[in-house]
Image 1 (cartoon, rainbow, N blue to C red):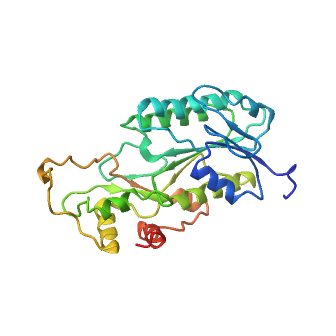
Image 2: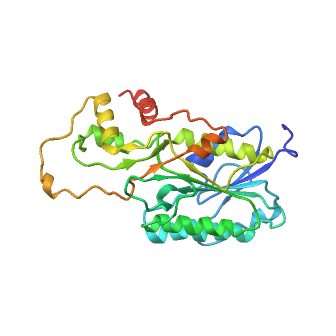
Amino acid sequence: MNDATTRPKVLLVGHGHLNQGLEESLAHQVEFHSISRSSRARSLHWAVDLTREAPEGIRDFAYDAVVFALSPPEFSETAYQDTYVKGVRQVLSVLNPQTRPTLFFVSSSSVYGQHEGEWVDESSETRPTGFSGQALLEAEALLREQEAPTCVLRVSGIYGGQRTRLIEQVQRGDFETEGESYYSNRVHETDVIRAMTHLLTRVLGKQPVDDCYLVSDGQPCLQKEVLGWLADEIGVRPRTDSGSQTNASRKPRRRVGSKRLSSQRLRQSGFTFRYPTFREGYGEMLDRLGL
């Protein structure tokens, strides 16, 4: 497996934290090629804006797998359509059709529109209410139309690494732990990379994988529970002064995310979470940040 001529070839479409982490995990077993908007100091990388052109150079390679982990430049309908739908279509247009690589796609739990606290799994109806989920579902459909095996990873809210927004919000005291709340779902960035590594390793080892997995930790919970736990750990309390905005005038909490995601299928494949609940995951972050 150390001979570069015999190692499997994997194309990474998008080269952010997730695909970089995947590459680091399997660097000695897999020959990776990559595509991103910006250049990289490495061979076999294409710096291509997929909203404008297709990466023609990948025609020359027979890939065992292609991993799409894309990130729009902004949160807008146009950016999501360009990144996920147009971007996926551009890559598919120049892939060698005779090799039938397994197509991995990092999607999102936003493809589910349930918001009444329902339990959701891979068989649940997809009825996205926002443009982000609609674009992702359209991209998933494009991949499934190909004459190649597809594996979609529907990932919940990612935290960990440099994703410190919720911690900073609690530090400011900008949160509430009383009154109504909604179910939230999350997964540590490290576990997303580990799940990607786990499933890609199975495919390259000729082991079966399902066509879709929910990637979320084992404890969906009310958001106010997470906020309260973080506040206790950091040693802060919510602001009681209303400032320029009274409690009555605050915008209502979004309920679109109020569902409970089951990751049973992923666990049944042999995967175990390093951070099975928010306590372990945010605990790691607080320790690392000295909080």
